[in-house]
Length: 71
Image (cartoon, rainbow, N blue to C red; front, side, top):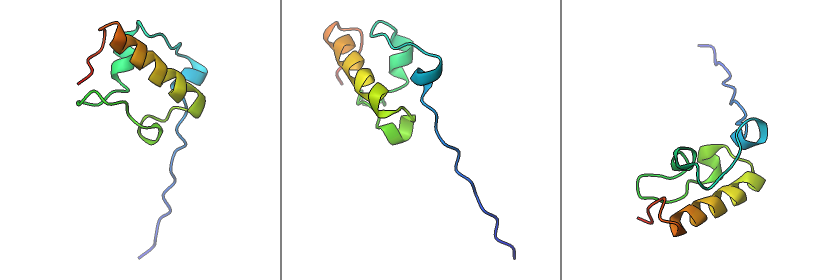
């Protein structure tokens, strides 16, 4: 049996290349929230640290404006 090497693809941050981050864009923010309305971690989403901080602030701001649910 020959063992094949599996290569992991490096995740690229979506916000670094193309998307802009806005707290009013609910469809984009909902991709980074799970079914229990918790913010997903960086490992799952593939967002860089800089944009993860901005993303969490945008989600919190959208929650305060009642655009996203708390639970």
